[in-house]
Length: 256
Ligand SMILES: NC(=O)c1ccc[n+]([C@@H]2O[C@H](COP(=O)([O-])OP(=O)(O)OC[C@H]3O[C@@H](n4cnc5c(N)ncnc54)[C@H](O)[C@@H]3O)[C@@H](O)[C@H]2O)c1
Image (tube, rainbow, N blue to C red; front, top):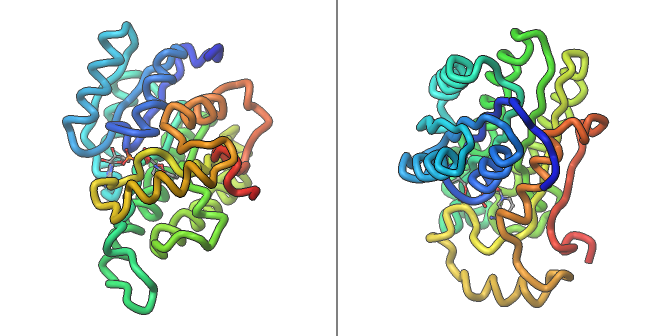
């Protein structure tokens, strides 16, 4: 990908796998320095090690993205290592396939845990990132990973659906109220990928794959590598006029 993020400092949550990991690799290939954050530690260590072995610069920081203190400390550690913070990608997310059931039977713990990570956690990520970006004199790019689930009523997972919808409001709020600091914020809405978050829990992975491959206009489920280029583009100067946008990357499924 021919985009330069030379010398830009990025922190990515949930970067030990999936979209976060693919984005960490691509930002590093584009010249950025990357704080690879997330849990579990094995994933972030592997991604960070891979980037460093390939000649890039990364550090791994174990962070539970639902924990305000850990997020704040991770941003401080990133600034200590690389001198500033230019880019934040909030990719950490969970999907409690089996517990996040029909609303009239929903265990409230499923709602709370999903929102702790997917909604409150992203708010906290943005809060601490914005504090650093404002303090260092403004400028910055934030990309929030929402989902096409945020613009549809179709998902059976009500907590996941409503959290991803809420993120679109957070995206708009930041875009409007932090433009004066030179900070842009955008949301990427991935479609159905080969593996979902917490995919081990998926009740019918094979059925989902068959249905999606038949339904998606481009004829296949997506991969993290299909999403990372859009995220990386939005972090670049080439996307300088994009803020508050909702960028759907879904093989065409939402327009059927
Ligand atoms: N895979 C899909 O079909 C799909 C579709 C639309 C949106 N998304 C969204 O994309 C984002 C990334 O998902 P993915 O597809 O790459 O799946 P993934 O499960 O590979 O990535 C999520 C990452 O977040 C980490 N994580 C979970 N809880 C965490 C926490 N509390 N703190 C820090 N890290 C935590 C996981 O360990 C994992 O590494 C998620 O927000 C997800 O909701 C995924």
